[in-house]
Length: 128
Image 1 (cartoon, rainbow, N blue to C red):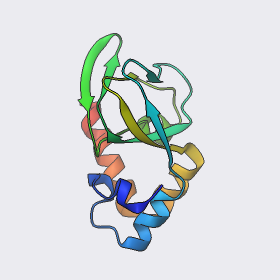
Image 2 (cartoon, rainbow, N blue to C red):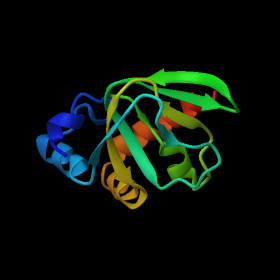
Image 3 (cartoon, one colour):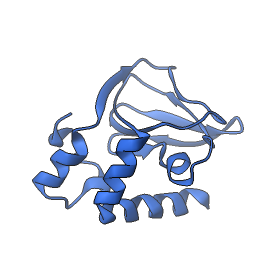
Image 4 (cartoon, one colour):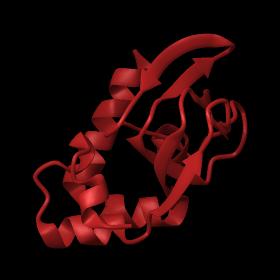
């Protein structure tokens, strides 16, 4: 994936071009049609996602929690905490996503403390 694809995400805001390129490299682009399942509650987590185009819906215990759009991300909670997924995520519209494996996510957050801190802040916010 190209650095330009993730540059608009607040998660990567302020990173140098070189840092953006290193973050973007392990992402694989996926396209999903509306209604597609992206993550299932209580499944083991092994991927992290950034929404590039379209919208996704987040449900926890069958209750609507949020709608995420371009620049938003999901899948970080279970990876950071080494837990099962706490929500179901489905494509609300046709979506283009960046998808990264868990080991690449860990390497990215280990290498870039700024990104790791932003992820922790999002987790704290989503816990409320």
